[in-house]
Length: 334
Image 1 (cartoon, helix red, strand yellow):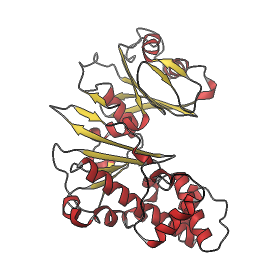
Image 2 (image 1 turned 120 degrees about the vertical axis):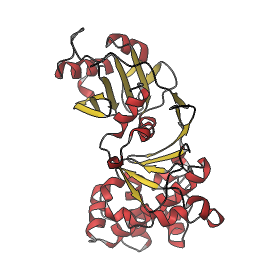
Image 3 (image 1 turned 90 degrees about the vertical axis):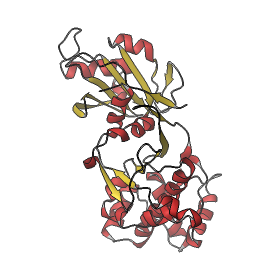
């Protein structure tokens, strides 16, 4: 389902937007005034029977639970880890199920938007300031052009933003993280061959995510006749940044290169001359390692299409809470 959003009438002066990014374990709440995110709190989902119970607890914690309290939110926008196809929403990895309309009324809101969590990240792009992103390589965005967004995290989120009339944007919602991963080198072919012994389908997400980094590390170790250590993605990344373990270094290098391949594919598919944005929790932590990796080189290595991709800029989103900015867009913030 595409998410087509347009500006809505302004809320009363002094009324912030209630935003929440809700995963399978934690729900992060906050308030947004314009671009300013404030009063963020993280609540354990297991401590609450429902989403409106958690939201009410948050409003109580920030002194805004009582109806008529000055500064109480009149609009809200929630991002959930799961598909959103109508009023009834069922979380993918959480027992919560709810009606958007019922939660809106229970919280005393005039409007409540509920969208997929990665759709919220994609919608943050129009609200990012220069300090919220870091450019990788060259390129200049073409005004009014399509934007592509990828997010390696626990999985691989993929989206795009299509501009319309005025300030209207359509956020594409699909499952692009599950496209088949294609190799570029013999070493990558061997790694994907190794992974095909474990998985029926080796998608981009199998290598371009936190668990994907582990898959790469283990496959590379096995190919070289070594027993892989029981390392999580954070320890593999730390070892790569320190240069202390060759297979960790190669795994993260391969991750960056493969991400460039997939980002270039997405840019070609969408015609993303407005730029390609990398979100998620993995890439920002790689810092200079990612900047000097083969990501950008792979991005433009598309044969006859090199000249088409070369002007398209690529960015890493560095804002700590981009989903909140996207939720403000979904709520129709000024």
